[in-house]
Image 1 (cartoon, rainbow, N blue to C red):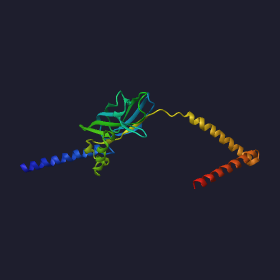
Image 2: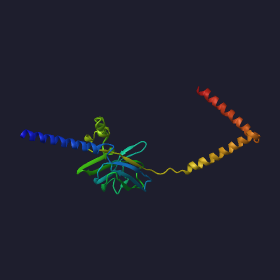
Image 3: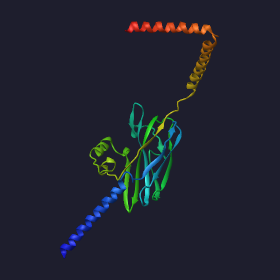
Image 4: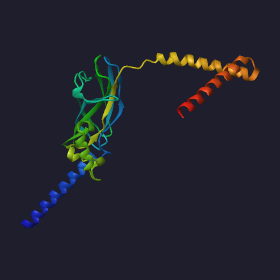
Length: 253
């Protein structure tokens, strides 16, 4: 009798372990994790504000409870430099700080939740592309889960997590090594002064006018021989150009 009860106990434990493993696979699978999408990222002039927005879709079959989303800046990059956000003297601010947590409540199954916030810069904020990382916390079936984007990990941690991943790891990332339940995307926005367009127009419009006038004159000369001096000038400068090109070829071999 004792052996029978002991066997029943072990069978129950094994079944519970399988159920939990299946639930974790379901939660962490890339096609099931909450989708962060519809990013609207601003281009901000130093000293101005910009609006950043995104959506969170609950792709599970039940409600996500007590959802919170932490948004933070972690780096700034230009064409030639890459700085940790701690090295930026006057970084942009999200709700008054470089990181802020939004408490979103519950998100029903297949529901979209839209998050909007403003980003403030100073006139002396460094120009460049600022990278944004996210951390999503929620409860599902009375179990707490945490998902993070790549910006929360160092290069070494990420390389090790991808190098040691197996085919069974969600998204080929070893999330157990990173101590998370899923990987969500990063984002970015840009802080820079706008390039003035008036020099382009000042140069481009006269050039177009000159080319149109020359095209009209050449047409009239070809069809009606109205401007013989134009044909003579064209032949003269074509000869000069050809002579100059031959001189260059001779000099530089």
